[in-house]
Image (tube, rainbow, N blue to C red; front, side, top):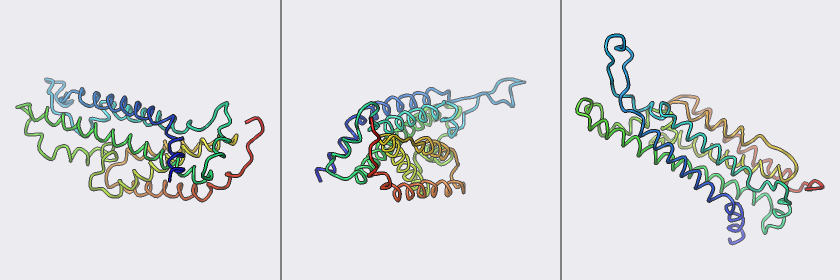
Length: 258
C-alpha cells in the first residue's frame, strides 16, 4: 500500500499547493463577481418613457457577472499545472518514473486518479461558492420591500436548475449530469497524465486541449437537453480508448538526449 501512496505523493508534491491556491483565488473571484452584480436592471421596454428597474433573473447571474469566465480561467490554469507536472522539461523524469516501485502503467493510472480528484475538488469549491453567492442574492432580493415576493425558499434551488452553468456545477437530483461531470473530470485527469507521459518520451499530446474544450462546452447545455446524453458518452468512450492504449508506449525507449 505504501508504494502506491508514494506514487500519489510524487504527483502531489509539486501540484497540491498550487491547485489549492488557484482554487482559492478563483473561488474568491467568482463569489465577489456574483455578489457585486446589481440585483436590479433596467427594463428595456420602459427606457423610452421612464427607466424602470426590475429584479435581474437569478439564473443569468453567472454569465452577466462574468463569473463563468473566472471559473473557466481557474480550470484552465489547473489543467496546465497538472499537465505540466512530471513533464521534466530539461530533466530526466522518465528515468525517475522507471525507478518507481510500481510499473509505469499503474503509476499512470494513479496519477490520473489524483488529477481527477484535484479537478473534482476545484468544481466542488466553485459549486460551494456559487451556492453561497446565490443565497446571498436571494436574501438581498427578499430584503427589498418592493420585490420581496420574487424570492422564496425554493429560489436558490430553482436557480441551480435553471442556469446551465450552475446546474453542471451542482446537478442536485439530475443523475445524468452527475455522471457526466464525473466522466469529464476523469477524462481531464487522464488527459493531463497522458500529456506528461508522452512528453517524457519526446512526444506531444493535444489531449488536455480536447478534454478542457469538451468539458467547458458541456457546462452550457441546459437541463434536459439531449446533448447532455451525448456528452456523457464522449468522455466514457475516450477513457476506454485511453485505458486500452495506456500500455502501448510504456516500454518505449527514452529518446537519446532526454
